[in-house]
Length: 576
Image (tube, rainbow, N blue to C red; front, top):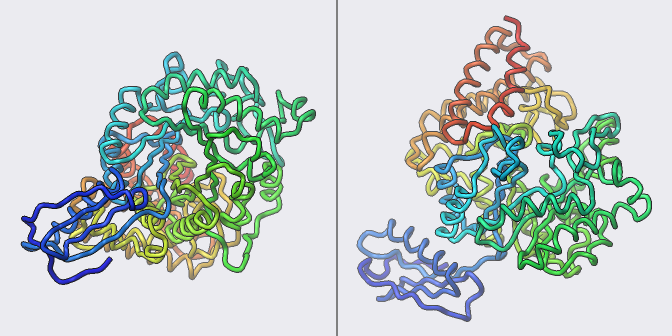
């Protein structure tokens, strides 16, 4: 981009010209002369160019700022996945604002990760009480997305992560392990369907009702983490053919009918990257999604994992070697299978985010993806353990991933805080983005190490299973508490004008309070003086009350108790 002092007058009409020489989604914009010209490759390029013009017009004072811009994306697919199955199902108003943020960051795909939160006909016992999306609501959301140039891609678990279904006796006959299973002494719930025709027919029945509500011809069938495969009903089949072949055959059972109907299925690639020889057997027309959610550790550093947890990880085949996407893409480059890279927002199990980890994870995904021929990026926002994180903590990684996947060379080092204050929150005080950044970094400052979570949430809710190692350091925990106190003080000065700005301030204040409560508990462990049980009980009770109000202002009521029951357990642990 080049910038001069002053360009054409604001009253000059904009000439919009299709230019087939530009890359897909590309545009050029020139306001330096007497005319204003927007050249674009396609409808997407036209939309992005018009969005820039709207921003420039707001800056102009009788004349356009004089600029010449040539712009197009590094990665053609830039998607966001929101988990709506672990507690939070947003209201329509929340979806409207999310779509605005995604459009601002130039995303062109949205997925709602669904296990049981679509109101399937005849399956009320599964979704009752979960505030599910209805067919009419999906069609409305599809239209809202289309108006913003975003493809709403259907997403439904069809094989694994089916706990919400298999917990009911009606569906238990479909399970690989009807009574659950144990790994390295850890009990695990039944979550995986049998790899057979009956289970595939069940999945296709769900998809037959779901897919007509979307204009997209893509569909994410998931199929990640088949932990039970071969441990129950399919043991003999696995003994004969091997887990890789049994998995591949079932994946083809799920995908081939969809391909025959003109759909383009997506699936999570973790099993394939553990068995890269299977890639050549994948059907033409599918897209693999390679995922990992930790930023690569410097100099090959490894997290010290307790032996019992290491045995669990080894038996389940989970890769947490912190090698980043160089490991997660194994078997995909050169296979002929198109693939997306899927980093994470890093917000789940954190209360207030892990923005430094998220930015490292995202940059690694884009860099490695570009070097290996990825066709796009899918940023994931998961809801593990009840989706307790404040939703506004996802905005910094959303903005960063949108910028990095559009042009990594220009945007790898951007600071999301200023972008958030100016364009997302429209915070006149310029405070909210900086507070989000500050609290999003405290998770790594306690002296402990953690994977896929923050030590602060682990301390707040000890009944949840988190991978946290090492003991907290008293001085470091004291500094974390001071940072959180300072953030709460600064947050009072925020003056956001965005659609959800006031709510973002409230929910972030409550989430910071919960994180501070976790830090107080860590301080106790480390020998710090701190609030007693009565004060802790009063603090947590007030925080739970406020956080419930914020939840209901942004989300539907179904699933709320899933997140709050563990907090209530902590509350009850304090002496009266």
